Image (cartoon, rainbow, N blue to C red; front, side, top):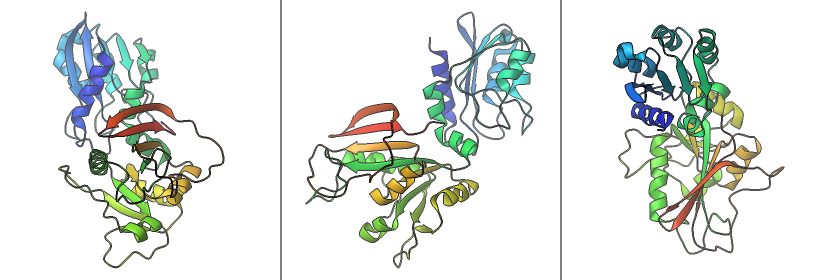
Length: 313
């Protein structure tokens, strides 16, 4: 049984409800049977591990705890989860991924020092689940995803067509906007398209902040927020304002600047089944090749979505 996968699934129940905290799920297993489970939702709810322990009661003693993220080892709004795990007599803990937050980290060492057997998987799925939070916490900037639609020959325009990608791909983009804290383009895109950058037709619970990087000025009536500073400085400022995820939709000039600065974490490439034959490509010249990690592909309507990581914290 994939117990850590179940813990990751449980963690998803807290999405949109954890504020500036990570998603965490926990499953307690004793003699092959689940005796407790929990997930983190909000400030006034117990942490995932504590919820699972409470549900298990005395059956937690000698059990194995599967938790998607390293149990916290500090006094914050609640006591350390490591103390609760040790006090309950859990004999083994399997951790999906380490906690990159230096304030809360150290749970592995604390558990081992208390005689608890610990296994750290560094699961890609567990790390991806909190990818925005992990980058925001460890690097002090938002997690940046570059989304772009291209033809088979890598162009961002197709002569005679308004859109490069199909309707299904465009709906996915609106879902991505709805899930992001901010969406950004460059001034070239602003002048050419006057984009709205809002999430439409997907039942968005909130709209992302909509940004334009560049010197401006913005067109009259634009609802975008102009960010004039250097990319690194602006990203750090946005992180301090609570922006943990940024969806980059700008043209190749802005995207190339982000990539060359090492500020793009994920690439989402919507490839349409058409040869454009003309127009700019989705990236300019780079200093060296960049290998993508954990690449996945899937069909989206008639298009193919290629997803890969330039950096996974």
